[in-house]
Length: 153
Image (cartoon, rainbow, N blue to C red; front, side, top):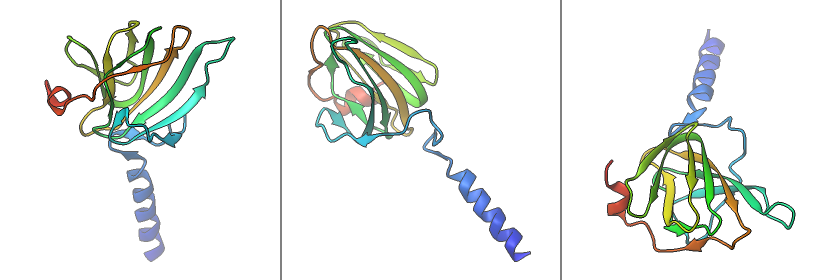
């Protein structure tokens, strides 16, 4: 009987830990490396899936944002596409309302349009970002103020 109870507790713990802060651990891509850039607020992880080169000038990366983590305001000279894989996230273009992103959502960021994206305040968010590099690198701007981040929640 003792072994059955211990086994049941281990199974419950294993399956109870499979989902933390709203994101499953069995995602398509690994989290990658912790981002240490000051272009992010909070903790985020990057898995570079495709490096831009002379043949294909698109960079593709999977980003895992822990709750509350987000980018600074920024723009991409050739635009960007965001594919929401899991969790709950936010996307906002300068002068527009914040958009809530969930698994399966797709955002097409227009070229040279300041925007930010990241996790909701209490849920991890996983995205794939496809960024054209043929017209230049990302232009990083100011931090997203807490008032902007929490507005409309």
